[in-house]
Amino acid sequence: MANNVSHITDYKVLARVVLILMSLTLLTIFVTSFHLGAFSVTVALLIAGVKAFFILTYFMHLKYESLLLRLLVTMIFVLYAVIILITFIDYAYR
Image (cartoon, rainbow, N blue to C red; front, side, top):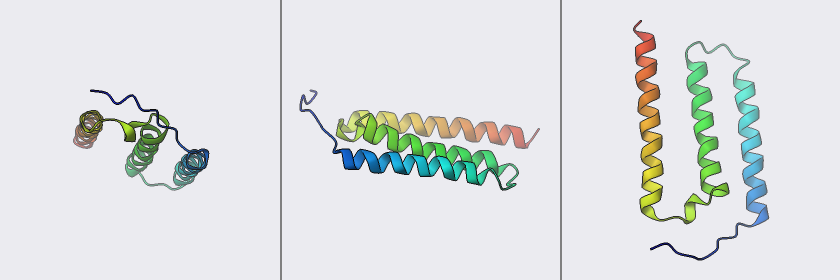
């Protein structure tokens, strides 16, 4: 059964999360100035994954949801990571 309690996040927390997201965006831009070769995409995807975590947790209120829903979302990210890994392996051996 779903819990019908409203969860209101404090504006200070949301402001910190926005600052973290902006910092991670600037970090992504900063990392592109280095020539990392094949790792450029990997680093960009890792930073994007961290940003997605913050968005899902705080702006989509996933931290207040049931354990089952959190596990399902986690499994989607694991599946996404496996697909990306398979794609990189396929690209490396062509």
